[in-house]
Image 1: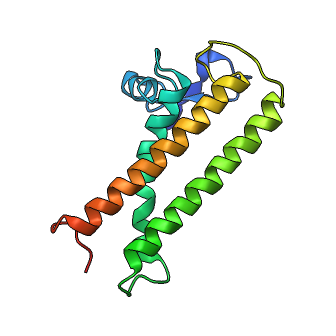
Image 2 (image 1 turned 90 degrees about the vertical axis):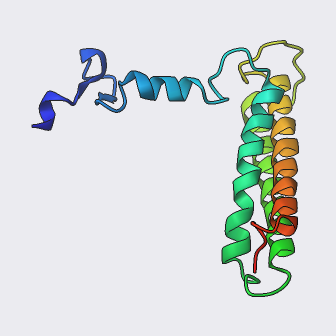
Length: 151
């Protein structure tokens, strides 16, 4: 039954990708094209900032609700500090990846596709600022807005 729907991508069995109704639909293609990594016209700094904003905002929740201090009065602060620690670790990982991929040489380029050291450094900085800022925003929301206050 499913053999009628699942075919090799572009009828080429050597590509290593299967075209399914999900992977080849226009809805999926539009969703993926609107992600910050693929959206046209964004600078590397704005790509990193947007990706960081999304990640920093949702990373605090698991640390607050599932962390070892979840039943104490310090759960929110401990979750926030853990989130900042993870963001620092992720930024160090981005730094190591950039050094391994692009080397330590400085390239002056205005490309916006994250394929140069300068663009990767801008992406990494945007990620750190965005993730830290949105984690701080989530901390403020969770600590001061009565609807979100953690009991």
